[in-house]
Image 1 (cartoon, rainbow, N blue to C red):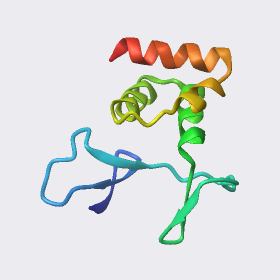
Image 2: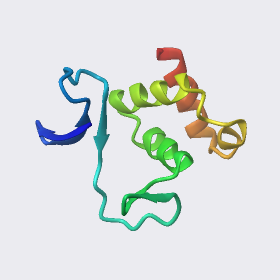
Image 3: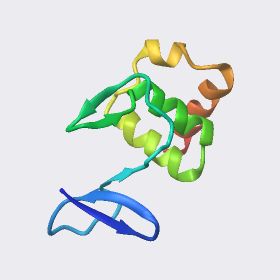
Length: 98
């Protein structure tokens, strides 16, 4: 993977392959991450926090990211049960768009 900054977006893409949708988009946030873990000194949000962030913002690209996460069967039943009714409904809507 190599770092690229294009159209105002930071991302990691596979070397020698067109990025298309298969890249890791990086979002740098000023807030301190309370949970999650650190990879090579970089704090990484926990998956349930990421899912809640995507459901809260819920733009088309967030729904697409949620579908990618869902295809990997990453949201656990416990994670889904902890969602508010509004966010649970948005997750259903994102799944219906897939």
